[in-house]
Length: 130
Image 1 (spheres, rainbow, N blue to C red):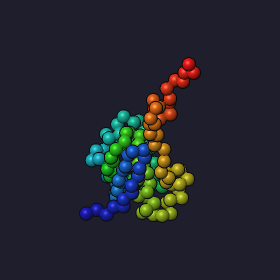
Image 2 (tube, rainbow, N blue to C red):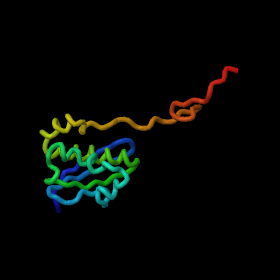
Image 3 (cartoon, helix red, strand yellow):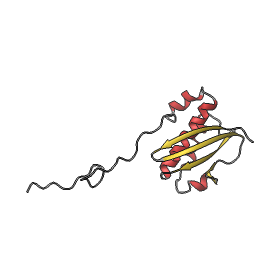
Image 4 (cartoon, one colour):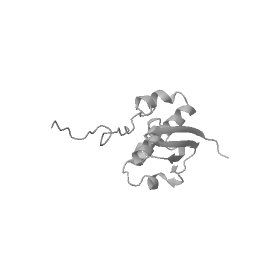
């Protein structure tokens, strides 16, 4: 059994459980290669691997991720946050470096709920005076 460090990342309605291993294997998401899983996003590999690149551990570590819920962007950013959290759990001194690159904080933005008597969250029916 390989030793790993785990980090959990969330964004919108996506949740990612990311495990970091020592070595130079291919990174996987839900059992598929990173490029296959996020094939429609052009910069997916750059976005997800950003925490590894910033701390200079790209060739030394690889990760596996399990992602649930949400869409492509939410899943991408959830994996990125999970990876960053796993990295600074491994070495707490990396947190300042990751924070400078804005990779540590969770993005709280999510879809606003629809209100009654509204067409969408904020859009109202047209007002008629008479």
